[in-house]
Length: 158
Ligand code: HEC
Picture 1 (spheres, rainbow, N blue to C red):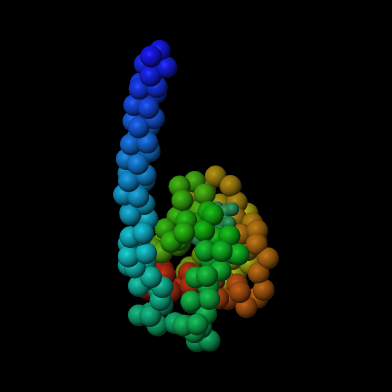
Picture 2 (picture 1 turned 60 degrees about the horizontal axis):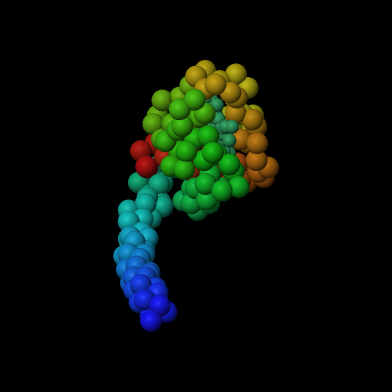
């Protein structure tokens, strides 16, 4: 009789434990629904994937370069680490590149290429400098592509 007295509370506990687990996994499933919907939430960003579409690009600059530059900006170019993933700038680190206000250059395509190559040793506002090519290793072609992207953004293509 002593044993049954123990078993009952134990099995109640075990049952309660199981129900809790069941409830939790339901919760977990519900919580997983929002991530599943994320691709839809990102759809508007994908529309931005052609920042240069409505911009008159300088001679020698193509839509393909803008698209390639966007990739570089957000990956190997490291630009996003200081200028933010959408080039909108990060306080103290790197300025907004989507407006047409420039701190160090006149905003022409050639000047953008140049400033990317040389970096900004003495920033006007930021706390620390921009190393040449943002510290990345880019070919001349990649620099021209990422400059095309910055040009497109800052000339109304964002
Ligand atoms: C380590 C941080 C850092 C990285 C990485 C970086 N930049 Fe910069 N960038 C800066 C800073 C700082 C300035 C100068 C801001 C100032 O003068 O106050 C700047 C300036 C610029 C400017 C001129 C803006 C102006 O108004 O004069 C351009 C264009 C630019 N960066 C593009 C890029 C591109 C393209 C990349 C990637 C290849 C890149 N940057 C990577 C920090 C960075």
